[in-house]
Amino acid sequence: MTTSIKPASGQAKSSSAPSHWRLIWAIARKDLAEVTTNTQFIVMSLLPVLIFLLYRLMVAGIDNSSALDIAVFDQGSSQLVSAMQENQALELHIVASEADLQEQINEGEMSGVQIPANFDADLAAGLKPELKIWLNPARGMSGETAVWQRFVEAEILRLGQQTLPAQVEWIELENNSFSTETVLDNYLIIIVLTMVFFLTGTNLVALLVTEEKEKQMGMVLMNSPANPYHIALGKALAGSVAIVFVLSLVILLNGGLTGNWPLALLYLAITLPVSLGISILAGSLLHTSKQCNSWLGVGMILFLIPAWFSTLLELPEPFGTIFSLMPTHFLVQGLTDAFNSSEVSAANGRNLTFWLAFMMVIVAITLWRLQQNPKSIVASR
Image (tube, rainbow, N blue to C red; front, top):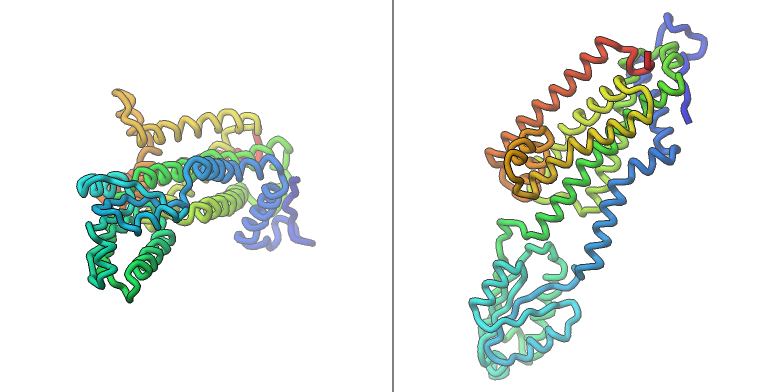
């Protein structure tokens, strides 16, 4: 469904035209109406969300994330262990030594408990034996951990028949480094977020431009008070609304962002004009939606995949060096550092600088193209 932008009632183009903002918003509103009613655009917009949900469903089917992993070193035969084994929300990993316990806590990324010998007897005698427990937040299961804490305290009260008969030392481990699971989740969210910009966003806006060329709507728009710059900005605004909506949906489904999320949002903010600049530029150069689906789609895949692989894998030379020089490498590497650490490193500052410079280049090229051939945004010839 494509509608036209008509001059205000009783006004010629040479008369008092609507404000620039009203023209831009009218074009954006028209394009948003088409995006929300065109099946192709809806599927294109929601494809990254579907991929993200599919991954979540697959992970949920493989790993029961509701079970809290706990390493247990029982120096005696405490009934506390038996009680925890009966709790379906806990997954116990019995170890034979204190060294194995520390290894599971540090490398297995799980909570741990060390129960001394004669623990139950000391409880019954009214003594206060020491029970050492490590709380590991690496799995991000704070709610389950809190439930486990209350469960342990209730069991101790039951065993001792008195008010808190044990000296329980809760040691909350600092989460200075992210677990392998968290890093993998962040890597996959980066893939989805970059897909929103460079597979969904760029194709969406470029298709809005090329479809109007095919339907010869360019002359209708040009006969309205709008000029090519209004049209380009209107389509960029419509694309921005669509991209931000899908990004917000993915982030909400992910439960937010980890690490230095303000820095991550800064990267995403810089990426928006890059995506819009590429889409407007491609729309002005391509003539049909078929060209847009084929050439731009392939181009964006080649633009993204090397950055994904160079971040996840150690590539042999010269591919490692070549891929590390691609602009999207700085974006993916910067987002990876931001999500996996709360600190801002020198490398992240360099990535941000290069990505910001690339954004300025793309915007400058797009503006130059529109200045050299303004009608290329509305007509093929």
